[in-house]
Image (cartoon, rainbow, N blue to C red):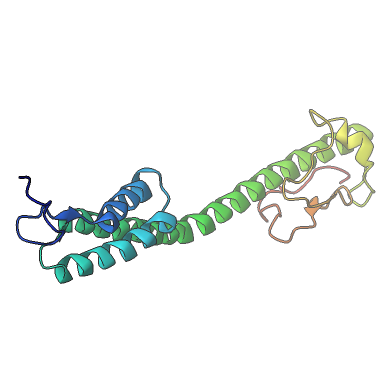
Length: 186
């Protein structure tokens, strides 16, 4: 006659693979490959620890320790990678902001230099005195593309002929050596 099937966990029974170990490994790999970070990494770590605990307590009836360990390693690695990305962002973002501000400042200074040169050309042609007010519309006619705008949103003031043009943003100013003594209106 036929022998009864072996009882689970009994002698001669084939050990079962832990479902938690498989899930841990799959989530751990997905957390790295699909860049899911802690969304899949944390469950992978939790399931990996639980699977290892169950495997140790099963007395050999459950297997999959290697898969549980793989899930733990990849889960922890993905969590570490998120922390690393956070630290890199903490360094990169302020540097990006600073470089953007520097580029805007440099572009504004270039605009102020164009305005200053156009003012001097305008003053020479109009024979304007150093204290004469500037006609901004006429000066803008000497600038290719018309009146420039500050890339950071500042507003330009042209001033009188002998005065440097200014921007409302405090750090956007012509260097003090930019203007040579003017021969206009001597």
